[in-house]
Image (cartoon, rainbow, N blue to C red; front, side, top):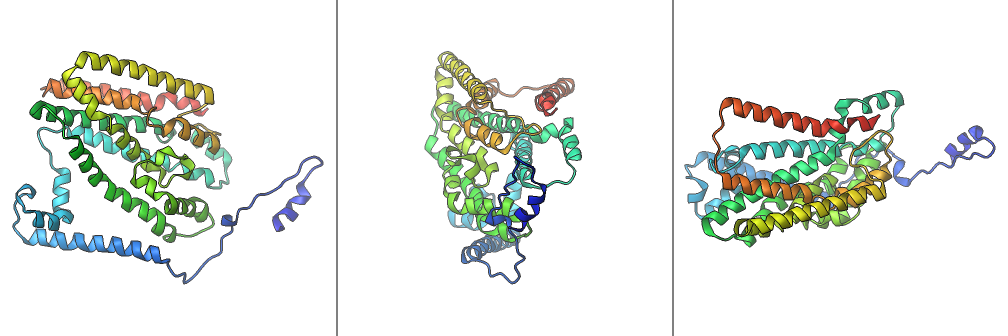
Length: 377
């Protein structure tokens, strides 16, 4: 009421200002607030995991256990939370893997997370619009505005690793243990994902405060309280992007959904390569045409340019960005790349050949990220 009274003096004939103030925009400092029961349960869960990791690490450090593969099931369960053993497994390199692909995919994951952090900026007030416009016109800002490039690259490299490993299994055994691989994938990814959405739902809203905290953090916490089950089932991209808990986890859902077709594709490539390549080529063209038509018909933009509205961003995310069929294009390319890498075997390159290859790849990667930077103008 006070704001409406203040604005009455600035209203001109034919022009009215009607401010909309949501209840969540009002902030009052709260002291001595008692944490909700579910928040205490979540903190207890994290504390229990931390204590388990500490005890497991101490047991592992003070005992002479052999390699994990030689342990009994009981001892393996005890040492599963050992920080020392998990770190060694994380940084270890095997001769039959592609460690460089893992590293590059990790970089794209970090960049994708950073790009998604631009979304809260739409809710943040600014005092110098000229400086904001100047920063958004910078060529280097394209690194954070080309989130679609990072998503496609992440999915393509995931497909390379999946196809490469499935191809090795087919060459050795003549078949793929599809159920075992799917179960192992779920067991590997779901606990970490569940911990993330639990933190977003019940803990993160209590680690800070302020007038902008409600609009950017508490809203997402409320979404996670009601929609976290979608994340755990890897189906959050089937629903509206604006109602998604922890939106930066959508690439895990895309990766999981596209993984379901990988064993069949690699199996067909192994036994009927010519026919499968033809089918994949036609599928690639069809999906590319669908993606182009969707962007043209609904006026979508995968690139975040200056003055783009939040409504346009959500429309792009709902109709294309988070749709697995639109992301099938880089995944198909990744499956083909991994299959040919597995068939070709090891290639011994000289120093000059490796340097030329890395230079060429670096130039192409830079071009793919910075080429659409002129769209910011």
